[in-house]
Amino acid sequence: MRTLKVLAPLAATAALLFATPVLAQQAGDWTFGLGAHVVSPKSGNGSLAGGALDADVGDNWRPTITGEYFFRDNWGIEILASLPFQHDIDLNGVKAGSTKHLPPTLSLQYHFNGSEKVKPFIGAGVNYTIFFSQETTGPLAGANLDLDNSWGLAAHAGVDFAVGDKKWLRVDARWIDIDTDVKVNGASVGTVNIDPMVYGAAFVWQF
Image (cartoon, rainbow, N blue to C red; front, side, top):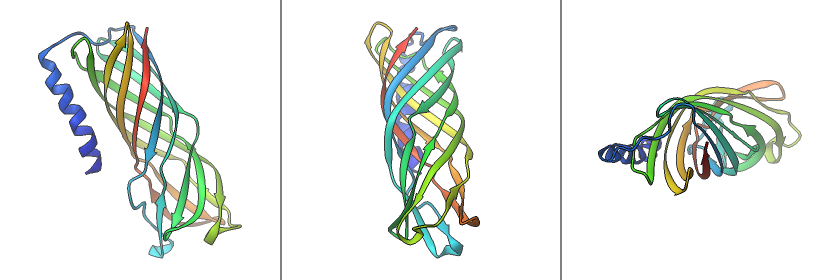
């Protein structure tokens, strides 16, 4: 539901701008984006140890980069990368550990023919999240925490605002399906469903 509340207004903006068609990017164009995004996991990230422990994963922001190649007019393939995000992990409301992750995401995107100043887009793709550098504290102090890497789908929507010749300010939101199996001292204790929204802004250059 939270995903629809965020992505639907961006999609509605795209539909309204059909009335003033101006070609978005053309085949052969490239864009490069540099920005910052916050990964905001859904509230309530699952139960562990047979329901005895409720997991909650905290928010975190990091610088991000994107690159996109337009293989035909309006259609592009985008890759998202970032510096490692770091998230605190609470169990029953008490900090029990932390983890870092990298969430590279590959998306197929459609850029609508909006106005000369405003160009919305939507996209969908696949994410591979790599977890590493787990640390434990509190109720898990001294334990070995392991999180499996995750494959999942991703959805993307945003709007580019012209700020110069082939320069854009981008505001966007993503939903990413991230689930990880959790092991403590080698024993499986359940699955954490992170499924975050990713919000942010970036400066985008078009080539």
